[in-house]
Image 1 (spheres, rainbow, N blue to C red):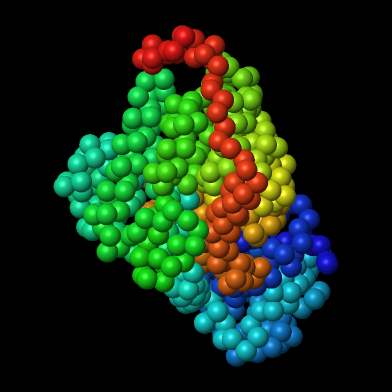
Image 2: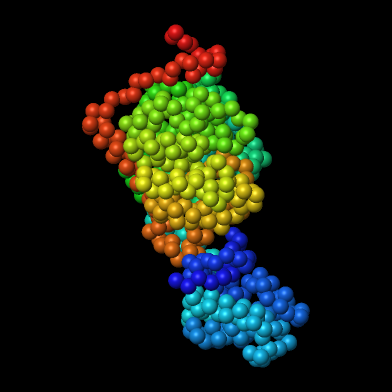
Length: 525
């Protein structure tokens, strides 16, 4: 496969192309094949590449007009390629030279001519398609959005992480008579005043969401105090919200029910717990929460537990790592094994890198990252490093990509194409069977442009459809098929373990790990 220096075009969410000249060799067909090249070639940014070579003052709009006039009637790769080459020579040498000849071009100009011609031919530009039509970004975007919405009618989009329940507690103290989820909360205070609010039923419908893991979250400050009580109250809240809006959503506690509910036209609603402190260091509490319908537990949040370290230890130089140094303690490994026995998914978002590795070495079932991204693209401890991505492939687990702008683009200036970059990187390293979506809406205050709330999922699918690697079947895996598979395999492992006679883990956390932390707990010692 030929390698060339390529002009790579990154589109903004509105479909307008921006160009960057790569300084390293890239596989052109991987980066350029299937792109809407006529749109690219007509974009203003392309002219800026050639403008420094010309003394002419012709504007990008004028240059594109000349290009259209000359090339629009052509059809077929060779004819369009010749036409494009001529137009590039015209731009490169100045539009005063209406009929440029080879003698008028410098070697640098010819390099650019050859580059654009090669890119155009490789991409299969203009075969039987009028130039003006292919250059219309709104037409191309509308077509991809229509395809995205068609896919969403056939397969459920299942988001791995939404913090609406905590906002209900924070804004209206869990008083559901004050909750108007059937209305647009964008115009209802205090929701409309908050950067943390992204969810209501009208927007869920617009985003065509087919399944949602609602999160029972409690702050780290509740650890060693009333974290179990608060977690139970949040589970109760989630189930009450589902009952209140039962015409739209339905509680689901196993993988088989998801598709059944989707086919009934409702949104499957599952429960997860964010933060191991929510179980109060108790395997008994863990078991009871499973009985209440909880189907995943995030081992930590932004604090260590006595048995697992959080990613916070990697993001703060002054943090003192409590209890276990790095990773999972022996009790933490018992938590993972008990989750396997129960059929509860182990969620590794928020944990330290060593906790990720320890959990993957311990678990007997696939694990999930409910809301994380690729560390190779944004070097943040909340994201997943490549060695762990490779382990996820072996484990048959899944990384559900979050939309928090600071974790997508380390400078915080993220858009939908940056999220697609993370998804594509995870695909490249772990494989298409190990990617999902876990936006973290209502738990973040900075979203990427084009992915502002739960109505915007079709935009992400449309962005991915620019890349010919993404078939309809691949998209269906990403949006929900992969998490359903993981959920099902976790249940299968549960059934195997219980059939083999595995009994509940009965170990207790050693009291020494709670010394100085148990002022509000009863001790049996």
